[in-house]
View 1 (tube, one colour):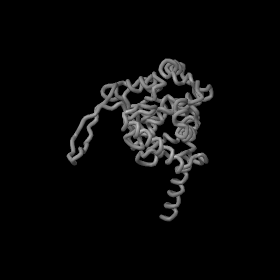
View 2: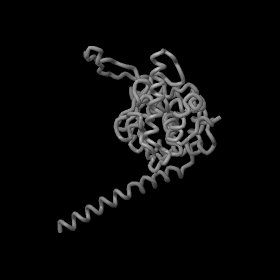
View 3: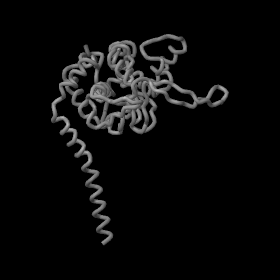
View 4: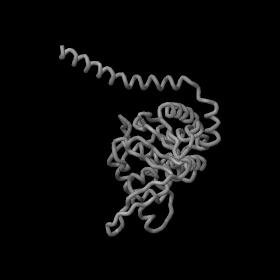
Length: 276
């Protein structure tokens, strides 16, 4: 009797596991049965000018991604902030740029977006040159946690969306980290899409390492080039900074870092340099 019970339980578990992808896809189809809200469209027109530069098919695809993202992710206001529809739409629009022409499954592990009114304070323990540890407080505009949480300053998210040609966008930056953290700690080597025949891990490593080294040289010489010096902190930060520039300064990156642009274009499956 116990044997049959165990078999039935195992079969039930298998059916549940097999049904999860189907149920997830069904729920997403249900979300997309509803038209894109008119108010959300006005928010995009007013707050996310990058959308106007994109081809019409990508604009439509982005709106569908936004609907699914908002339906599936939990937004939490911090420090007394009440999260509004506008906040959800502006943040979701920027986050979903990274999964255009790609599967939304790359964000399956993302659970919560915590939103502060402005820069938020964190305490870090740092070690100085002689090994002495000190607790220091830092003001941040964003942070990405490997547990599927993204912390954002609303003011910085809003400012990043408003200026589309400075290569500075905290939402793109932090969600690039989330992609990098799909398989664990961020290290500047995000997982490619399943079945992606264009991705070559060795080439990716070589191209990003070369561009990273170039940025380190610029920082040492005190030169400001296309990429934010913040990316010199680590390969993970370099990937996030390069992502910001890729989407906001695509033509410039294609000119100054053609190999890097080609790798990012192959990974993200879009060509921002061609957007007008």
